[in-house]
Amino acid sequence: MNYNKIKDIAAQKNMPISALCKEIGMTESGFYMAVKNKSFKVRTIEDIANILGVSPVIFFNESGDSTNINQASGLNTGTMNQNVRVGNLSDCQKELERAYDKITSLEQRLNDKEEMIKSKDEVIALLREKR
Image (cartoon, rainbow, N blue to C red; front, side, top):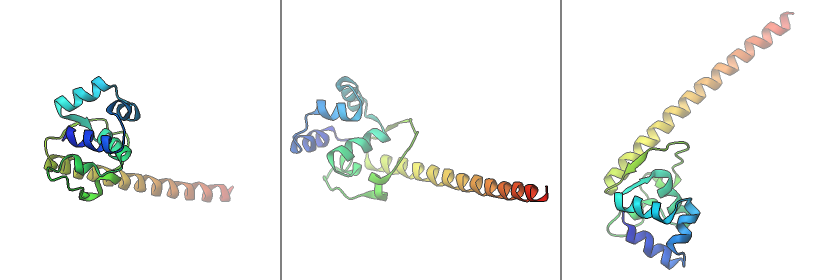
């Protein structure tokens, strides 16, 4: 992740890093530690991008191109709390793909559960009619 891109974009938007940190719910020291260790939560990267009005991918492209891979800025990770080491765009893209796979799997499980509930509701309705 390229910290200089965050700093440059924030400066263009007249937003000090301290204000950005406050917006994303991090202390400045926590932010700088994550920069130093190259370890940010996916959600934090998305929050930074949303606040600055850019795609998260821009922080990983060396060219500064803001091409949106897999609609990265639209990813909703929900309660995913794992830290992601993001050394380059390829690592980030792989992590996003795993997150999308997980979301797809969870959506399917939710649909299955909703169908099960619907089926049981129908059985309950039939049993009530027989009374």
